[in-house]
Length: 138
Image (cartoon, rainbow, N blue to C red; front, side):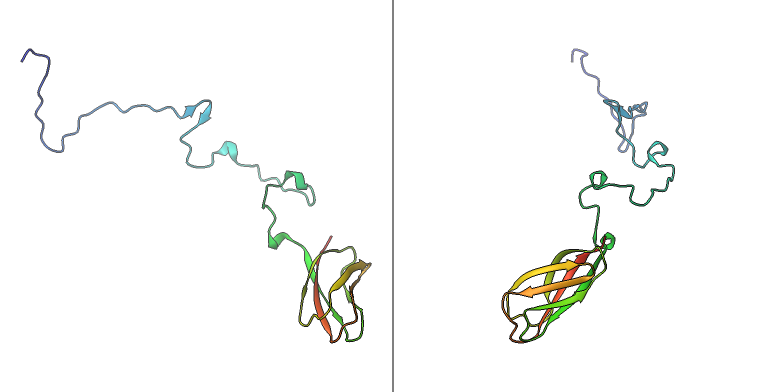
């Protein structure tokens, strides 16, 4: 051998003591090792006033069924009739309807005026027709 290589014989399990490497916790100005929310990210506990968060400030899918204020109104149309009514909260907005039993005619129109929800059929019902109207409370 020409002295270029050094042979070291060590026992199994030997660990060489090295100085630990100091890793920076910032990269491109950002913390990269944070595993929890730091005090600098916590809010001061401010209470948000009612109606102060607008739609533009909300993230996608932020509103779920628990937050939705809605009501269901039953409207029955008797045989031989073309319309029937139900009672809703004043100011509510119709967002949909569904069958609640027999339906033998096409729905021509659904409207709300004050607290009265009216469903009008395209032709007279041959038997009682039953509907549920879904309304968004304001």
